[in-house]
Image (cartoon, rainbow, N blue to C red; front, top):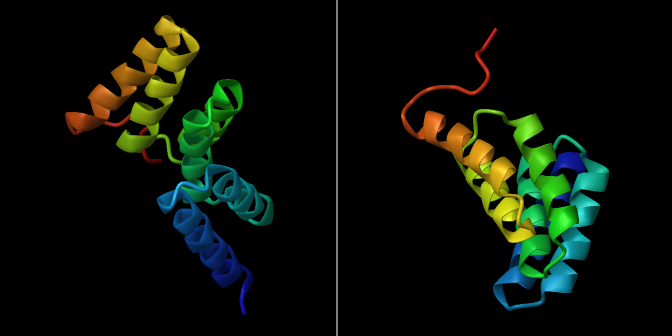
Length: 114
């Protein structure tokens, strides 16, 4: 099995755990995904959201920042990061992330393609 297939299988397992409410098990699997492939956007995004759900806000923000670094023009990533900042009480950063999401929702780009 290729490394990318292993990551995808692990990601599917994590999603299964999340679906039945096993948040800690999902977090463990998502962590393994991003350890195996640090460029795996879906893993970072899902890990951030699972951490947010389990009230691990600071770490969730770190994952959210990694997700927007990997895909700076991803609307969902910026929206999620804004939610994380709101939960942390950091309204200026939440508004900034929301602003980037708004730009993307209107068809703009946060980072121009080179």
